[in-house]
Image 1 (tube, rainbow, N blue to C red):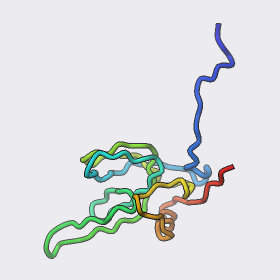
Image 2: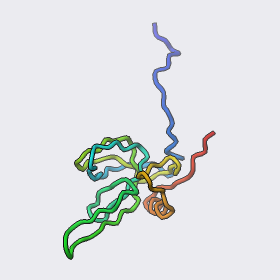
Image 3: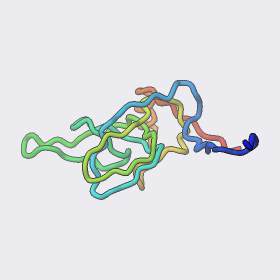
Image 4: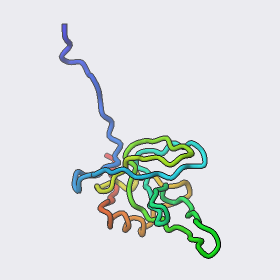
Length: 137
């Protein structure tokens, strides 16, 4: 006999997304390899490098490329938000990130010791990511 009142699943709301407008849209980005295997959580803000077009966790120290006269230190700009938990190893990998949407700033994750700055929020706004504050009831 079938149980019609049985709970077959549940969904937990992590409060990352604030609202359905603007639509949370995803795309693939190349995440730069880590020194050691690392787990990055959903909601991690990623910064785009102007040197190699790869992303790193916002607040990561800029890397220097090239040698001699062609040495260049990359600029890292807040660009997108990781959409799912991911394990990153010592090789670059493709991950899925939000490129647009309306998110709660107090649920975002950045590098340890770093604080999301107003300039970071402005860079995210320029690419279509709006930030607000989650209100816990």
